[in-house]
Image (cartoon, rainbow, N blue to C red; front, top):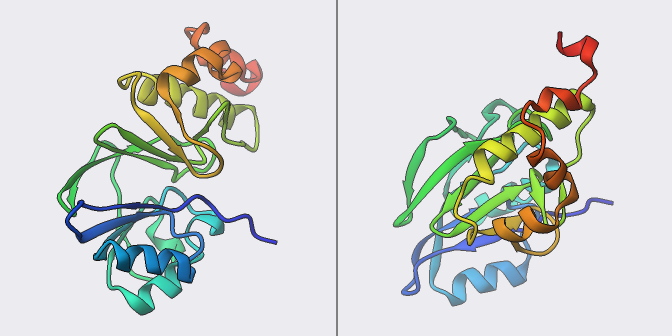
Length: 196
């Protein structure tokens, strides 16, 4: 069984070119929503390499002809434009800042668009993404602390799974982040013999 990610559709009110974030599953309901809003999917943003976040690309590409952006272009069966950290893209009338935050995977990116932050599996409401070990967890927490929690506290977080949140809510209630905010050197979270 595959747990699909949250897929997000971003487009102008009047219709036209639109962005799809993490096409984990493409079904008739999503296609109808795209068509009802008079959107054409011109760009796809993939937060990271896990199948649940890009499994629907094959179906999507049979209907639309978007440019696909990802941190690991060699992992996909379709042409993909590689993302660079801190790169700002102008897509479908929107300014998109790509923020690399490794830890969950090495190619994990968050996308900052206006007052919205699409975090994939980097950060969820109330918890951080899963990691394979203490080094990866320290890397993820360091990235979240220095790259995401520095954004405006009113920024709305749209995670890869689960409900939405805000930067302020995560600072107040996410126990992993509360603990990390109190540690100046996040290497303390890792096994000392591995770091030194």
